Length: 299
Image 1 (tube, one colour):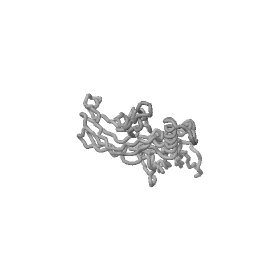
Image 2: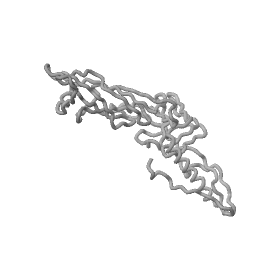
Image 3: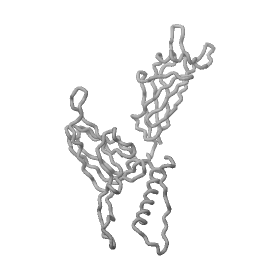
Image 4: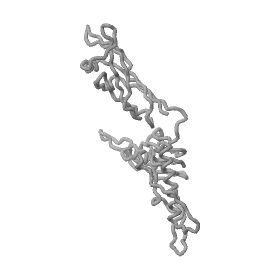
């Protein structure tokens, strides 16, 4: 978060005998709200805090959203106080490349609604003035969105649905939900990348590749550990075998992946460990039958 996102707040005070206007009291409310939102986005993660369960069975034409509390990436509270029933998108599906109709995928999301979009719950007459609103509803915008239209952090995902002939085609996907509460224990995930899926690139002193970890759904950049598994005896020709020593280095780590760079060393004829000549590295890459094994620890 940059300093530019910090609101221009003022400490509001009152003096004896001061004539208070509606704007004075509204300013107090707004200042407290801005402070709370600043606190939320600086010290807490965005996502679902409690509730917001979504239920629906295969064949249903609607889903039910339970009351809940969530925070968006700007720190604003997304509060639903009563259960709501939402019809599933009225679509038959989408056309596949072969002309057949296949299920369409939608995401049920919530987002913040400004005061101007909230309904009036109570209004009162003023003293020698027209009536005005004194109570608004508190509720988020509930909508079905396609993935390309979702603004990450502003739209908080509650569920994923596949729709065919205007009804749920499969069980709701709930693994797309993001939890605002910190985990009570570290989140650990691991994976492997087979040789055929690795695109090694020669770099000074070794080789490099990007490892995609998006399937692990890390919410923040974890601590990564990785190594290449496979034979270090690389036969280039009948009379030429490289006995490699590898040193893995992780760079440019992100929640969805990292760059694995492997420093290539070798034993020479004197059984000394020396660097592999950079001009030989490109020729070694097609002979490497290595599998990348990685693990990420978040929290």
